[in-house]
Image (tube, rainbow, N blue to C red; front, top):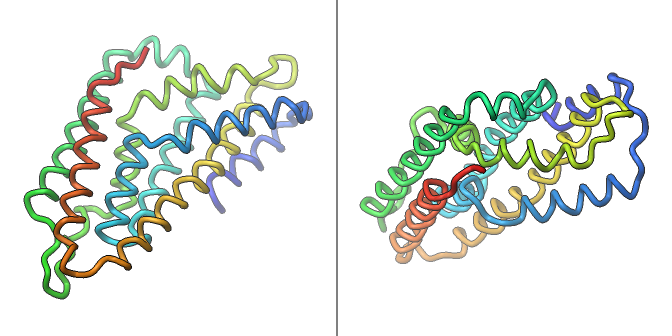
Length: 222
């Protein structure tokens, strides 16, 4: 079952009272706005879809969905306390994630896909799913966004845990749709590019990753 579906089922099992439809739709619109804007995760998906094809981007998405599931569970059990007590740890995680993205980008810029058949770089060690999981978990900005964003739509009189799981599942579904669109579009763009231009595409993908890492390094979670 998709992680979002599992969380949705859990929220129903928790006995959440129905949320007003206007509140839910407002939340869904805001979540869409958040997920569409490219960040480190989308940057990774774009780079891998351009270099390895849409399947690689979808595997990154699976990893990020697993990470989002972990974050939503943390939120349900008290994210504000976790963020407050572990702010220093999150800061180090942010820097580690930034360094990882920049390292991937530099490697791709220096060694882009070759012109010969089979010139696509080898997949990351461990695969694309753990790579997506690592990038999302080393981006504490996402945790803070969840801690400040989702609670705005939670009514404490309706069962907090169930609402958090429901809203979290909705966020995961929307993120899957938007991230998947990036994977498909850029995967198809890769197929339309001649082999003679693959080295340029590889370097552009590397620059995407470097830019995403720099963005993550310079962004301070408030």
